[in-house]
Length: 99
Image (cartoon, rainbow, N blue to C red; front, side, top):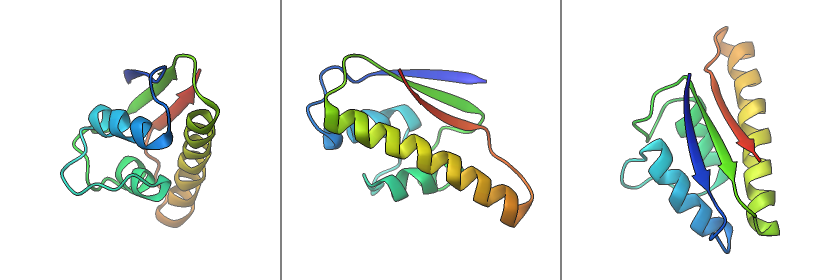
């Protein structure tokens, strides 16, 4: 499994974190910055070029809003994987870990 590390120390807000995450997943132009947009790309395979399986590890001294966004995204990815298993009968190995 591929591991991609993102140092989010310098991110002052979720928008800056989203820019780093766009780079990490190789988002195509027009990709959104919401949790839903990242879940679509990472779990359902639209709008990004990085192919599963992979783990994204978020490191650094995270500002509270960035930590909250990353944690919410991690939880949303887990829920979407469960939904995919339930509806489609398959899984996609994508994980976002907040260090």
